[in-house]
Length: 133
Image (cartoon, rainbow, N blue to C red; front, side, top):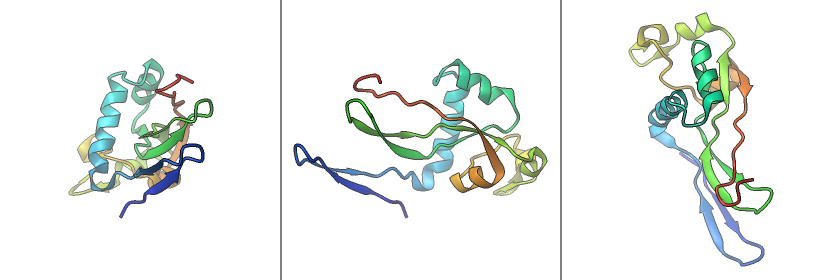
């Protein structure tokens, strides 16, 4: 089950709905985010961090972002980067029929795993697509 939010603009009274969850396609979204970071889509710093250590993880959960300047809002991937607290423990984690070591990579990392098994490296600074702030 996902979650959704309903909003009503105080000025114009327009009603909006936002569904930030990803659901069952999260592993696919996660892998696409990793590939995009490694390809440099989010800049050279993110690319370098992702490629600098073994099993760096990304928070690929969708969240609601509201611009503090123009109040424009959108749903986007979190994109914060994390490193494993214990690389050897990550190697032995089971994903389906294989371990991470057998896969050669971590297929996906859920938000609760990021909190338990990983440490934050850096938060992604989102820019407003409307005003650029």
